[in-house]
Length: 577
Image 1: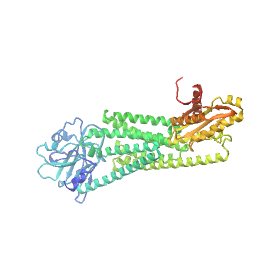
Image 2: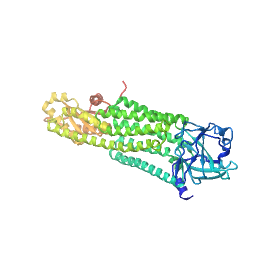
Image 3: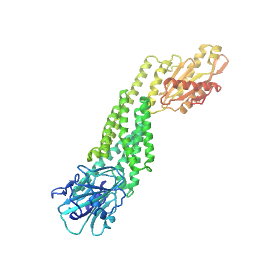
Image 4: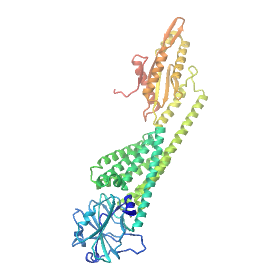
């Protein structure tokens, strides 16, 4: 196959489906479209402005038919610029003329990755034509067909079949120039996929270290981008699904739907839109749902319809996310500025790609790859946003610790039990709920109340009652962690704020406190031994509730514990009236 063939084997470009050369003098009538002339020193030649088009809606015409009347007269000039035919399911025949010696070894390159291919044998079935061709890879095809007689005038026919939009940016290359072009494309793809993989793997490591779902959603989003652009650039078809173009096209749309879904999930978590922008949170949920529906339809609905729907959603979604990022940033969430910049660049690239894809602006390689370039820049900026988020959360944690020390200095301690007092509890519960929301960690609140404490005080006096409370404070300290906040909430009632702890685990801690306290025997009078018990209620934080709601839930669970006979524990759960 040689160096050229091996270079094409690893390329991701789609070449012309069929090349046909015929003697120009007996095929083409006079036409306003000029002939292509290739000077000897040229390495490539753009064909924009030199081609004519003929649609074949039924895929019915052979090369012999389109070279003969009346079809040969029905070709129409494509006009200046790259031919753009919009959304079409038809086959399209392209014709252009060459003047001069037959340019043996030149390759027709079509920079549109959505073209179906045919086999060389379809061309060889036409009698009277000499066929020379190469098909070194599943997605590369180049064939020459021409009469045996020599001529200085050649008419070239090529037939293209696409799904969705059809644009024909065609260029003639020498073999050496085409190989260099392929190398540059492969290098560009390698840089892009390297960036995406590096960002994904780095943040996957952070996810395993920090256990924040924002990093997981970012990684899923990166892999969705990777899969989509593998399909968009034709690499899935070339290396994973050779010859299965229809399935490859459907999978590419499915991967695009995954981009919408994972981008929405990442946005909701990173910007905490449920709390910071509730209206936009519902819009993002709608985008996620729409992406899921289109993903399901990717394997069944008409391809041209899906292409149009995905184009609309793909153009609109970035600007929705840009808006919500601006709103959240204005409301004081600093890392949103990187997110805003990332999606702004991504949105510009997406818009440029959409305008190029739809033919609103002229085709250029930069315009066609602007979506991919924008996504690479976005991946880096989003990684910066996540890093800034770590910095902000670390700063908040340090500020919280400083606040705790200042609170200690202001005597936020209960003199009798040595625990924090109710003022500290009211100051701490809100920040702890906010940190749990930002980090995605659990948070539990436990309320304890001494059973029949008024009766104990009435019978044995307040001094003995104070000893009971002091001992309970000791038992609470013995069973809780340094990161927990044990408070005397008021009178004989105590409260435990327990960060990074689920409700079930908090219940287990409460049960140990209750059992430990119950086992202790008080002697309020000589010869009088008394055991005192506590009832316990617990609640686990749920996103969106207010601090008072959180306290009320734990208090409600404590009420259920009292109603169940006291000396027991209950975990709050939603109950039907």
